[in-house]
Every structure is written in structure tokens, then in C-alpha cells.
Length: 63
Image 1 (tube, rainbow, N blue to C red):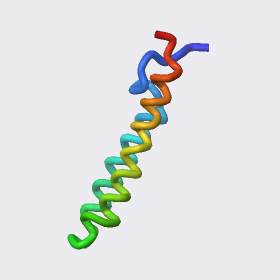
Image 2: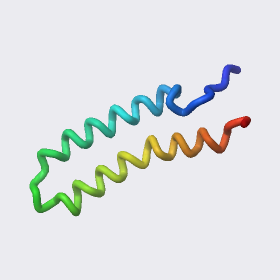
Image 3: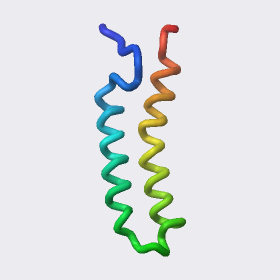
């Protein structure tokens, strides 16, 4: 089995970055009064996906 050396090589990480980009674009249209509520929560949840993938990949590294 070929192991990925870097989390940035993972397809799932690349797709999660695309998702975060779409979330930021979508939430830009939310009402300004939601900037610290729903908008922030959606963005933080989205950003946590690639962050958790990167963290998990680091734990499984052989180095």
C-alpha cells in the first residue's frame, strides 16, 4: 500500500478545502446580524474538517 507523505496529497483534504471555500462564499450572503452567530458557526465547522484530517494524518505518520 502506498502511503501519502503529506495530508495535502489526500483527495479528501483537497475536497474539504473546496467545501470550506464554498461555505465562505455562501455565508457571505447571510444577513450582517448573523456574522457572529450562524455565519461564524458554519465557517468554524467547515474549517474543522480539513484541520481534523491534517491532524489525523499527522498521528498516522511513520516519521
